[in-house]
Amino acid sequence: MKRFQGLQVGSLKYVEYSGVVVFLIVSLLTIVMVVPNGSTSVAGVFWQDWKMTPYGPLGPSDRAVLIKVRQANLWEMPTGQQAQERGRSARVREVGGILAEDHKLLDERVRGVAEQLDVVLPSMPTPTQQDWMAELSKLSGAEYDKLAVYRLRYAHGQVIQLLAEVRAGTRNELVRSFVQHTMLVVLRHITLLESTGLVDYEQLPEPLPPERRPRV
Image (cartoon, rainbow, N blue to C red):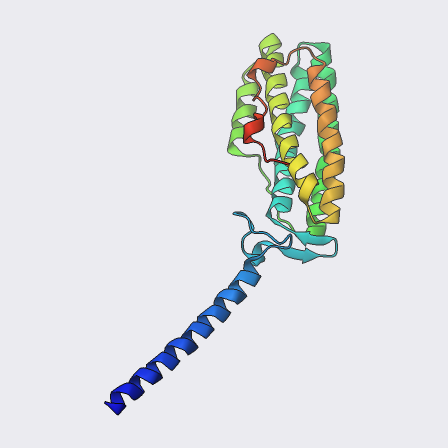
């Protein structure tokens, strides 16, 4: 009976010891999994998704915005040049030339930032962007003008949303400066594209309704 009781006491001590070890491991994992802003996210729940740089922490959204801008340049540079040459409207040709030159300069800038932050950039546009380019290459005249303006206006509207989100929350000084500059370029392009008079606003995505936005 005593031996049995002794085994019970030993077993209880073993369980208590194991509980302490498990608690310490869980606590350590919790600390490691907390991202620099003190919260967790789906994209950056693990610490290895973040990297400390001379300009501050670099997170998944910072990398994503550099990649998205690079991909935008890769299709909007040649499409701007194409619009400059193929556009039927003089305004479309003029705007196309401006976009092509701006994206050339922006591409030099994003590659420089990525190099400083050790971010690998793509060398090709996304499959969707490649489809857009192939689609436009088959058109001419007024039909080309309308679709080129629509595709470019839609794309700029999408990227500026990501830029705004990163600008609002990035912890990285270099990314913040780059995104600030890029937002001004994108807003300028949106205004230029709308100045052609060919933007069909009914085809553009509607803003999120208030009930789907985070409460402030």
